[in-house]
Length: 358
Ligand SMILES: *Cc1c(COP(=O)(O)O)cnc(C)c1O
Image 1 (cartoon, helix red, strand yellow):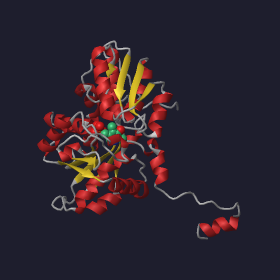
Image 2 (image 1 turned 135 degrees about the vertical axis):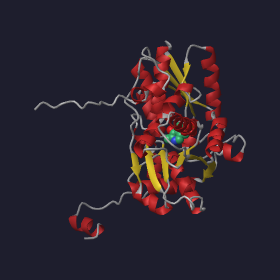
Image 3 (image 1 turned 90 degrees about the horizontal axis):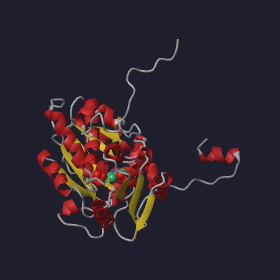
């Protein structure tokens, strides 16, 4: 018997959710088959919180972060509009994703990164995909202002999350979660940097409720890092600091929309310390076998903080989806700096057996 191809071959988020996205038959789809990431139940975290905890592992996208969902849309639309080049400011993952999708589309990609403040894995990706990487002597917010100014005056498409197609693509993660659970969860926890993703999830959940695919909406729980928490503190943070470089943002581009998601959903936006982030980062790796980059662990750190404060005490058994935004291998230095060094032993069977307890 000849091996038969399955009836349904996965073609990426645009083909899967075409009817909910601003594309037409004329849109050239640039895709790396992003999306369709696992929603992993966590027994450990469920027991700890009394909730049913699900981990949306976005680190398994083609370039290792959720940015690919938005980038397939942004680059496809840029190509449709005849653009020859794209540009972004990035704490890392946007540039890695933009660079990958741009080379697939045959477009030039220029990225501005804040000098010295980018995880090594991400920089390696952008460079391997042949982006023109410019390390700016300034912070992310300055880099973004520069990109806005250049792309508004020259024929280059901006692919930061200010690009409305990014949000459109990213909202598909909320659709996927709703499919797996059969409805929206009661809570959704998510790290907040520029706040595009919380905006996108909220939009996705609302759209699925509007068309009758879901019967309810989750409370959106956003988490910033304590040293980069402008929304929580209600003011711009001039010098944001956190080990979670992907959310090291002092003036979020989608600030107002994040507040709207919080208020419309009856949720909250809170902050977590670097210590709480690292603790969740290690728990995820060591209890659940899920390796994420530090920023991603902010969702779980926040959920644990709220759980300890009694926030969920009247919601025991409720479902919560935690977005894990990026893969742990993006930031190997933080991982290596937070674990034991390898044990150095002689090449002697007895010595090794003794070490492993036999
Ligand atoms: C971009 C990013 C974030 C922040 O998302 P926003 O949409 O900017 O709020 C968080 N974690 C990772 C890994 C990211 O790449």
